[in-house]
Structures are given as C-alpha cells and as structure tokens.
Image (cartoon, rainbow, N blue to C red; front, side, top):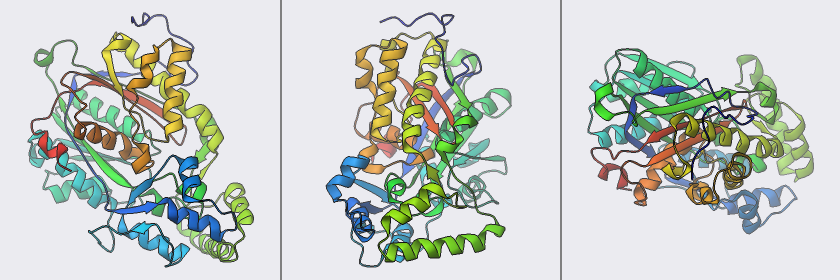
Length: 422
C-alpha cells in the first residue's frame, strides 16, 4: 500500500513535520538491564485492602494490564518500610545489593551494548544519558558510567525529562555525530521511578511502573558506506499546554520539612485505612518529590502525539506502509499502544495490518520510562523476530508533554549472541 506524498501533510495537532533530523547514523549495538526483584499484583491488592478499597490481584491486572514489575531489591525494601514487612508480592532476586544506583544499571546495559557491537569503550567519542528519575545532580550518571567503563575524558551530556527523552536523546546523538568529528556515541538510559519520583501508596500510579536500564551504540556512517536508504530519521516536539496531565517536581532543600510532614500524613492515613482521604490527597495536592498524573488526559493525548510522529517520519523517508516492519513504542501501557495503532489507521489512512506491527511487552515489565524502547528491542531480538534490513519506528511520549519518534533500518550487531543470552 503506497504512502501519500510528503507534500500532502495532514493536519497534525502536535508534530511540526518540517523540523526533523536526517542523519547518516547506524545503530550498531544495544543492550538492557533488568533488575532481579519483582513486585506482583498481590502487593498492590494488599495495599488497597489496607486502605479500605480492596482490589483482588486479578482486578489489579485487569486495571493495569500488568502481571509483574521488575524492580531493584532496594525498592522492595522501601515497599516493606511503607506498606509493612508482612506485605506479600515482594520477591527479592538472587542479587541483593543494599542499594543499586541508576549508574550501576546503566553501566550494565552499556557493557552489553558495547559487547554486542564488538567495540571497546575507549573508541566512544561521546556519551549521552537520559532519565526521568535520576536524583544525582552532579556528577551525572553518564559521567559515572564513562569513568567506570574506562572511556576517554570525552564529552558527557545528561538529558532529564519524561519518557520521550529516549527519542530526544537519540536525536541529540545523531546530531552530535553528524555535526562533529565524533564517530561513535553511547546512549545510556536508566530509571528508578518507583522509589525516586512517586509514592508507593499512590497505587493507581505506582502500580504501572517498573525499573531498569537500556543502552544504544550509534555510529556515524560515511556517504559511500551505505547508500541512500541508510539514513536515520528522528523527530521530536513539546507542548507544555499538556503539562498538567503528567508532571512532577524535584524536591529542593526548602521542601524537605514540608515533604516530611506530607509523608507522615500519608503514612497515618494508610495505617488508619482512610483510602478515600488518601486518594484525595494524591489527586488534589501538588507535592514536591512525587509525580502526579491525570490518566484520562494522558490516554487521550499520548497516542495521537506518537501516531503523528511515526506518520511524519514515514513520509520523510518516502517509505510505503508495507516497508515498515515493526512499530516499537514507548511502553506506557497496552491501551495507549493499541490506540496509537487505531489512530494511524483511522486518521492517517494506514492499513489494518498496522496493528500486527505493534510491539507490546508492557505486561511483564510495566512502564520503564526512557528504558522501555531499548528493553523492547532486546526482547524482540531474543524472540528471534528481527531480520536484517527491517525498518523500525520507535515512537515515545512523556510528561511535559514531550513526544517524538525515530525511524531506522535494523542491522544485526557484530555479536548478536550477547543480546540473545538472557
């Protein structure tokens, strides 16, 4: 089925189609890190029961679309401190460090990405990090990864933002590689949202998220290396009019006393089983240190922003619909993913086969924010679904509202076995 001409732009609500990046850049390596701890629906069922608004594990699964969430063991310790040591559904993994930082998770993912490409850390010319939950102001975690990998003292950049920071950072990597002498860029993304940016007892929000890390290794290509079809296309945008739908604040020193008072109030309401009052507190108050979400607004706007980004890039690349093999979106939740497919079909004329190209692994991981697309790509590789030369669209949307997509042609890394190995 043929794609409409690029000049025939549809009306986009979010995307400015002419502001995009086309770069001679190739993804040559990738990897991820999944923490060994897990939170099952039994935990959130226990919390709702204690709050006087009981939900069964089955009801939690139906509402969230999740069976389990991978998290750090330190996050499980926090869950026990808040919800009680007897809380079920907290499964500690075999690796039990007292504290596992975002830098350590990013380092593990970076090592896998480098190994998959058969490249040495000293070859990397720049490192860029992305996170929505990093609580280290300085040094940033990409700088820590840089040092622990034994890289040269090259440029290190940190991008902080919602879940679409993963596509923003891909664009930043592509532009750095295209505009300078840099040949190889390492992108590291790590998230610890449950412990860093939301309250565990705000179960309608916290039950949607997991933790983990991912990394991409990108290489600049010379004009005569790949031909005309080997460009990477990336587009991003932002619309702060939608900021109230999903937002959060990093606490400052002046906020510490107020946060302590809020936490004591939250804990007291939990222990007294006042679920309705606690829910009103989470919905109505703007508390530093904790994220806040309007689920209905996010569901309405997020799929459209991603659909527009994917549609615009396919037009820029001059590809037919059938040329695109997979759409690997940010795993916000399964309903958002499938609504994005519906919008592509209904509003932009994509064929019904589009739904078969959507990748959805949300069920076993939860929302990993900026680490979600990399984790999905690794899982596709492990399932044997990727083929040489396939075109992949990687859309994302996040708090802000920020949104974007990357369109690239897939090539197997030099050492694919390092990715396939679980």
